[in-house]
Each structure stands twice: as C-alpha cells, then as structure tokens.
Amino acid sequence: MRKSAFILVIDSYLVRKGMVSVLHQIPGLRILQEFNHTGSLLAFLRKQPVDFIIISQNLFEASTDLFVRDHFLLDKIILLKKGPGEANTTHNPGAKAHASIHLGEEKEEIMGKIQGLLDESDFKKEASETMNLSPRETTIVRLVSLGLTNRQIADHLFLSAHTVVTHRKNISSKLGIKSVSALTVYAIVNNIITIEEVTSKPTQ
Image (tube, rainbow, N blue to C red):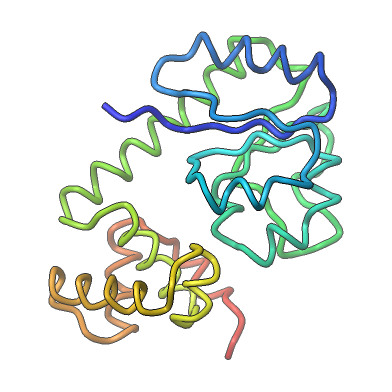
C-alpha cells in the first residue's frame, strides 16, 4: 500500500523535529522533506508530488499568494497554529487551509487528527479506483468542476496543456460524460467536490 507523502514547512527547528517525531509514530505516511521557509517550496513541488503539507501559521500567512494561485495546494495544507484560538484563514479570503492542528494539543490528539486525514485520503483513493479514475484524473475532474480551463489546470498541476486534454478525453471515455455541467454533478455525487465549493466558485 502506498504511503501518504508529507512535507514539513516549519521555521522553528525544535517544533519541526518534534513534529517529525510524532509523524514517525503514525503508520501509513512518509516524510519527503523538511523546510524552514517557503523559498524553495514551489520548486520542490514541481518535481515531487505530495499528499499533505504541514506548515506554520506565520509561513502560511506570508505565502498566501502562492496557495491562492495554486488552489489544489490548499487541499493539502495542515496548518500548524500556536494555539486553538488562532484563525484558520488569513487576510486573504481565498486562503483557507484544509485542516489545522495546534501546538497546545496532546500528542495523541495530533496523531488522531492526522490519522483521520489519512483515512479520508485513503477513502478518496479507493473511491477513485472504484470509479476507474486515476488519482490524477480525479484531481482534474475536481479542477474542471471548479471552473478552471485546460491551461489553468496545466499550470496548477505542472503539466502541458496537451496532457490535460488527453486526461480529459480519457475521463470522458471512462465515465461517458461529455459536458462540464454533467461532470460537475458527477464530482459532487462522488464526493470529489462539495456543492459549496461549486456554488462559491467565481464567475468567469
């Protein structure tokens, strides 16, 4: 079984190493890389796909433009907050993390939250396999449902536009769905995207 890939973006050395120690006690995941800043994060993500990004609140706030521009990254974000009272969003309304943990939580609580995210991720992967869609195709279905163009999807996933077009043809062939509206309904029904996300997407 494939292990979920994590990266840590935490400026404090002690906090970062403490989080590494906690993650090592959770089966089903692997740590690909540790960062103390976001400077080289995008270059790394272009080369290496990841499932989750644990990032400090302050580094997240300083890099919201990156995450808002590449919406698919927000679905991977686990925000590391100093305390439970800190907001899960920043001044940028488009930057909302997928999940959050805070330093005041007990180790067992943190492990439980992360294990829950892994279980949710496994469920989505199994659903994708049942639908005969690859994880990449499932991601593209989600982005199409959010209203992104082929060019935008290519930029978000670091693919060529031709590759995205090929994926979309394969998706249409597998599902027998031709229109974007029908694909969006399919994505909602199969929990690839929520109806709230669809209704809140900006108009073109």
